[in-house]
Length: 331
Image (cartoon, rainbow, N blue to C red):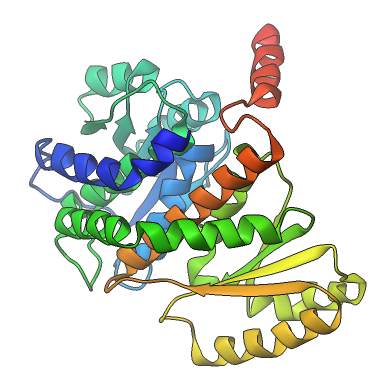
């Protein structure tokens, strides 16, 4: 896992170059909404695209993380099925339901049943290298989805050449590698005896979810995330029970809403008064994708350092393997 995280910038570059060599249909199909199907490390890409393109995409973007699909799926819905292995049970079930309702389909996978279905139906499909933990292939997932979305006519306003921006993000991470590792080390120390609470502007919730998932899977740690301003209407009251066992980590970008920034400033004082450790970091980058990738890489390193210091295997997912094994017996 250390090698996979350290090579994340190179993964982004390789993904951009690979996508450039995988042509997609040039004719933009008629579609009035997009549903991205995926679970876990494959599903986080859909959340990211919803956030990266939320203020520029002219159709709604939804993420599906279940066996079921929304009732609004139909012939003018574009369904992007994402499964790293190509065999994710929930994603394939949801895809079957979408096909039954006449949805248009595109895919992103390394192989398996999803690749076979795409080939059989003639769906546009982007392939990625297989053989690694899905969560470690995040760069491939997001870059592939950006390529799919660009072919559908949806690009970020601040970087319409999505593959060039991906390579620029990789260069940024290389330039910031020492600073990222240093920050991750400081926060790993902070969390050695504290429970992490992750916070940020609502716009970056996909990044917070990625952090939570990485802390769960790599560091084997439970944690919570919430976003501003929504947390001011519920979770803030729960801080009546906050204490020194908690560390509140704030992730910022230059796009934080001005009023939200004030809310966060005021809440940091509340959390500190409750006895919690409070720390923050601001993303670096000239585009939204670059800033988000900067934060992702920081979170990945944090999860890895916490795993190493706790003496746990960041690759091991025995509880997930057990669950899948038991479910397979019931099939």
